[in-house]
Amino acid sequence: MKTFSLFCFVFILTSVTEPSLLEAQYSEESISIVVHESIETDAINIAQLKAFYTLNTLNWKDGNRIRLADYKGDNYLRIRFYSKLDLTPSKIKKIWLRAQFTGKSIPPNVVNSVAEMIEAVTDLPGTIGYVPTSRVSPDMRILFEISNDL
Image (cartoon, rainbow, N blue to C red):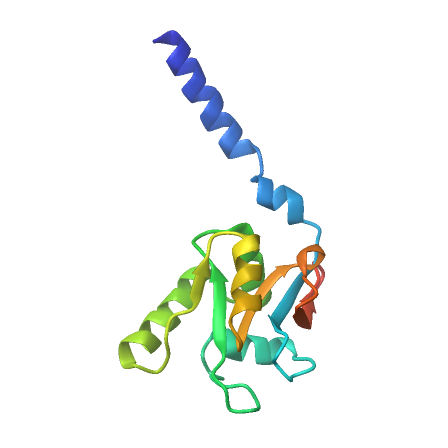
């Protein structure tokens, strides 16, 4: 029983004081806003990006539907991304639930990892997502980059 208690104490202590692997790996890196290579838009600004993710802009310039990809839960990249947009994950969830309930939009494609985000963006035309800049693949287009000092 003593060993189990000690294990629990050490586990709790390290999980509180140690940053997550994802956070440690990407904490200093810029976040690239990426789209499927078929998207013809060359660049966007932070206001346009916010309009996409708050569902104020639903279509690309060519009229095709914007498909959002987002990380699940309290993913470190997700929290950083929304903080740069002056949003929180809980506020964005409310926006998306309201839009889904009213029939204005469909929910985003939710992914669990950077690898799944890359797959979502590269496999489905019209998709926009965000990844650490070092993970951008050749079949994606970068529309915007969020640096740590933005």
